[in-house]
Length: 361
Image 1 (cartoon, rainbow, N blue to C red):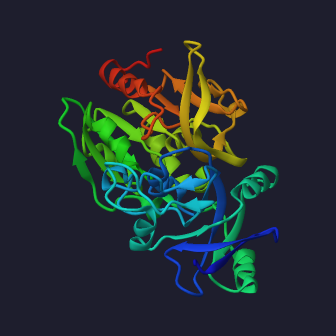
Image 2 (image 1 turned 90 degrees about the vertical axis):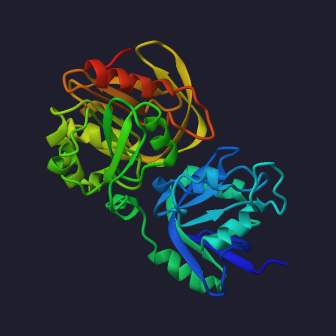
């Protein structure tokens, strides 16, 4: 029998469940609750640095079915604050599995709560928006007190917490790209390294330090938190706009838009999943995309920058292009692993931009 645990949201809503993963008696986890609708890829989600500051609720009821493998880690450690699931599978049924999910959570000190009505929790977050809160193996009044004091991601700089502290290199292409690590995923680096020689640099790097690497192009990675809290990072991108071709993904898209004069805003409950339809306005093609973001770019503030992609669910700006500044970006994740892989062509588009200086259609 698992020990009982409670989950309490900042609005006072209470859920009962059982402690899982790293769950010493009295331990309580706090953060901003979001939900992810993907049917697979739980390990990639747990280790995605973009989830720093957040507690991930998986809408799919059975998590852990195919176990875990080091090959699926997107970072050296999990970055989400905790995990909420309906059922943690005790069986890892997959030839790639090197162990079970719960063992993985315990080894990495990541707390979870299971036996929760995740359908009810998801519906609540959809109607009320992302909420802060707490869960843990403690008395209800203790968890409730921690929930009331929990902080969300608004106004926080979380990227410097998840970024590399030293530059490192991958790949051996004829062109050199510097990737600014705001919370970069391993699969992103892999995709770039298939095409370029890549140097990944810390998020705190100055424009001069970045240009000292003599790059042919610049890449702005994904990352966690509120882009409006990253004024110094936007300032660096503003200094770099005229210097090299630029490609941004997710938070990198939001920071590039900010450097181009746009503003951002927080979505009610964000986009977290692997089946969002996005339309490429230049071709009319609809891509099925993976997404993970709580903030978005305000299309009304883009001025002369062209919107290249839109979300067909809610009209959110999913991409932008500026041939004047030799840059483009997308809100979604073309590198997504596991898929969908509909948008992998964007890395080839970046290759073409670096080579000839113009964003193709």
